[in-house]
Amino acid sequence: MSDLGLPQRFLDLAQRARGPRALSEAGLRERFGDPAQVELEAGQVWRARWDEVSMLVLVLDVDDLEVSAVPVTIDPPGEDETSVVVDGSRTAFGVDATVWAGLACCVPMRVLERVVDAWDDDIVGCATARAQGRPGPVAAGVREGQAIRSALEPAAEVRAGLTDDLEYLQHAPGLPVQESGRPAESLASLLGDRLELGALCTALQLPQPEVMKLLRGKTPLSPDQIDTVASATGLPAEQIAGTVRPLPADLVRAVEHPRWRSVWVRRARRLGVSETQARLTGGYSTFALAARQTGGGTADWDARLRQFLHAENGAEGSP
Image (cartoon, rainbow, N blue to C red; front, top):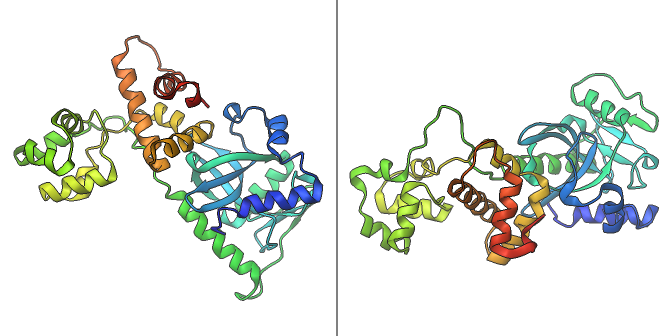
């Protein structure tokens, strides 16, 4: 299940069964509009991806930074006693789809990549009931899954792969979020008498002004820099990582929303860094930009993100 091309193969299979329009890029735009403007809602089926792990998930509920979701498969076939199987006539795939309700869990929004379908409330209700251990289904075109009789059955392997992939998606690294009432400790205050600026500049291979930004929390430490500082100072890497200044929850919510996913992927490709690092530095750069600007009221972080990205890369930086 960790084959990055697998969900695309799902879509290819569905296109052959029902025709290319509904799941083509043009068809998806016709059904859902601009991907950057799609509102995340219960009942949507999304392609979720992180690194080499990719799968389809049905969203059951939406929270601030995560969604309650269940895996969906259409190929290879498989089901278990906690599943519901949706007839292909009720989905865009054109073939039966298994909702593995027994594997329901919360996954971070940042792993959602593309909405590919939206299912009716009665189907979502069936999946939710099964996920909560209640009787069902009662919707037309939906049946209960059949039990796996042996660990040697192909369905058992599918379920095990889905379980592993969900765990991987759950641990996709996100931005540090500010907690109310918790003051952030700077790297400078943590180091105290251990601080040797010259040695730190040499270890990090950075000029003094850049190191000062790291010490004061104006620029986030990358994972490699955390390890370097830990080696240079003798402090545990966990303590060093704890000095990375957390970002406002509203900003994190904007940065990690699926509407910005393609922007971070493009930025990572352009800068030659990981998607995680592209999102991290983009979030902190946006926060730094906002700190330099004046004005009261609640910050429009989507607008601030567009402003930062436009200044960095022109119109290409907007979702």
